[in-house]
Image (tube, rainbow, N blue to C red; front, side, top):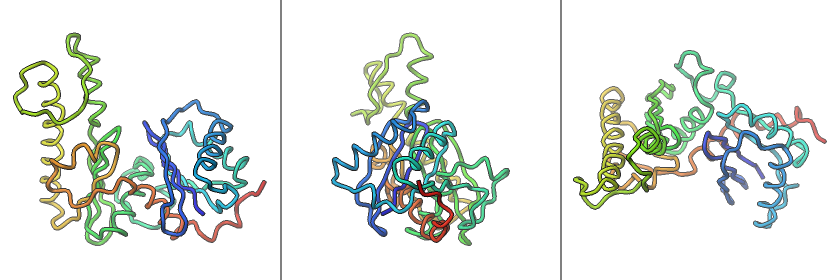
Length: 263
């Protein structure tokens, strides 16, 4: 079995694969101060609850955009799985050509998503990750990662509105019943929800003018909340990053297990 770990700014997602089948996955809050033992206890308990044998894990592959978590996660893998994890490095991979300067600035999760989108849905492709930040990643018809767009995420936008305006409350992010709000809460919900839909739709239309015929794939924590309004999106794949990590392992890392330190 393969353990795939996606460490994002807000959430850490773990998935267990048997071949190309995702057996189960878990979503945890990302905590920069979490220790190796805390990671280990979490993994041990999760595996136990799902009746999975952690001794059957043959490799661990990680995409991380939170550097402080990398060392404790690496130590956890050594101590609890007897494995040294593979970390996806955009500058040190050969699965996709990257036209981004410098390459080290592009997040590992964005490269992983791009590889998964091409493999699962074809090229050219546009990947929208609706998470802490909203990112648009563009892959050409020749399979080149061209770059993309980074915008504040929906949650960040809502929190900024609450924290920077003294008289505005924190509101639930959801589609309001009408576009013209008759209260402060309704007005904020309309601006957040419909404003965000318009931003995503507008950017997609602009990108499609340069990359025609692209398959549009949405992922991330807010994808389910917005997808009913995003008619341009053809595919919603909440586990796109996990599948990208599996693909990275199978096509780039597999066969290098001899380099692992067993403990």
